Every structure is written in C-alpha cells, then in structure tokens.
Length: 377
Image (cartoon, rainbow, N blue to C red; front, side, top):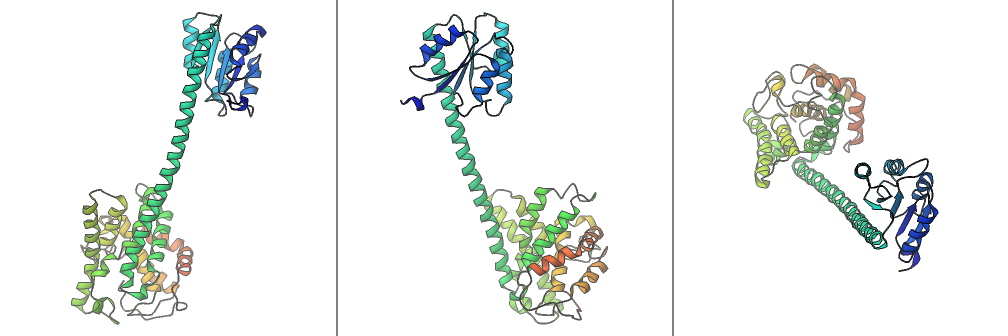
C-alpha cells in the first residue's frame, strides 16, 4: 500500500512523549498527523487531508477532549470521523459521558501497543463499512429517484395517451385536454387557501387533480359517431345517449382499479371528475342530479373549466365564442350551474385563464362571435 493510500490517523495529545510513542507505533501502517491542543485538532480535522480516525486525549489544558468532541460532532465536515478517547483516568462516569457525546471507544494510558493497534484497526474497518454503506445508499437513492421519475413520466404519458384516444374521436376538440388541465390546476391553486377548500386542496391533491383531469371525457370513446360528431342540436334520445359518457368514463376507470388490485389516489379523482363533471350546483345536471357540496370538489372545478373551454372552442355544432362573452356566461351560471366561490376565483383571475387558452390555442385563428343556443361539451 502506497503512503498516500494509507488511512489517516490524527493523534491529539498535549504531551510530546505520548505523541512520539503513538507515532512510532502507528506510522508503519498509517499516515499519522499530530496536534497538541483541542484547537489544533479542529483545524486539522477540517483540513483537506481529513483524518479517518482521531485518537483524542481527554485531559488537555484549555479545550478538553469532551469539548473538542462536541465541536467535531457539530461540524458537518467532521461529524462522521470516529473518535477514540485516550485517558489515564479509570472513571466510569467520564467514559459514559464520552460515549454519550459520540466517542467510538476508550483506550486507557499507559497504552498497550497490541490493544491500540487492535482498536484502531477495528474502528477503521467499521468506518470503511459505514462509508461503503453510505455510498451504496446514495447510489440506491439516485436509482430510486430515477425509477420514481421514470414511473411518474410513464404515468403521465399513459394518462395523456388515454385522453388523446378519447379526443381522437372528435378531432375538433384539439388541445382541449391541455387547456382544461391548465384551467383546473389554476383554479385549484387560487382556491387552496380559501376556507371552504383549504382542507381539501393540498399540494398533493392539486398534483393528483392535474394528473387525472385529462381523463374527464374518457367515456366519449363509447359514444357512437353519429351522435358525437353530429353537426347540430341533439335530439332528446341522442342527448340521453350522449350523457352516458360520464358513467362510461368512470366505469372504465373503476374497472382499471379492479384490474390492478391496488388503490391509486389519482384514479379515484379521475373517476370523480369523469362521473360528475356535468353535475350542476342546482341539481339540474347529470348523471345523478347531485346538488351543491354533494358534488365532489374535483368535479366542480372541472365543470367550470370544461364549459369555459367548450364556449371558446370550435365544435361541430358551433363556432367559437369570444372570451368576454364566455366570461359572462360563466358569471351568469354562478350559484346555478357552478359553485359560486369557484366562479369568483375564475373571474378574479380571468386573464390567467385566457393566457392558458392562448398558449394551447387550436389552429384556425381567433374566436368568432356565435349565437350559442346550447353548449354540448
């Protein structure tokens, strides 16, 4: 073993004779550094040539061994260096105190060479094992973070793929899933401190909400083209079939939950949104006619987002509506179609919702004025 690759041991003792003896004993196998005071120990221990082990005298003038050990443990650079106390005192109380402060071991004076070498070797082997384990843990943490990021991306891509599958049935909806996802997250962000919503809209909930929002119209894959793509107002029987997309979507997600035999929070929210985002505050919505707070918060948020986007977007049965006109329709639905507090948040930050709409605008130019008789989203 080359000199540079040998473990480094720092000996701290105010007696030159002790330093000499320990240096003679240890230098054949280790790189030996020396300090004659507690202050000197702290300087050397924090230097680029950080020791692998410190042999520290307890009784020294000025800063004693206990004080030095305390300072070593307070410093992130030196807190993991093992310290073996050197003492001439056979004091159980002192030994207990040292161990409580973090000393690895005690060697009593006068020293016995074989004991010193054995204990030094034991502590260095233990440190080597700890360092190896720390490196392994660090590598494992990096791998876990990589896998988590990969799983997260896979989940997001899978959700987006399913959502796009539904949107492909209706090519005119374009970037609808991106816009509604942005609206929902923006609404939740603006309401997370509101007294009515603060217990629900945690950072975790909002993240799950954003993930699950693209699946709100998943059930449209089960609606026949002659209804989904009809250019005009639906007949009563057609409208009844169109309304089933809410339950079809939630049923599909529920089946997925059963298949994986493991509850996933974002799927629960996706199921809520798909099933109830067409419910209305006054109970006139579908599929279950829920009223008020009986409608899940996730679905109430999506209701505003979905209707606003339907209003400002081209559909087979209508042209796009200008933003200000859509704003007035949303405002008029406060307390009837929508939760009033959610509408207030939408109106208070309307410009930010327009910015999202512009960011994910579909091809075809700016919105045009249209006499909208019925919004079928």
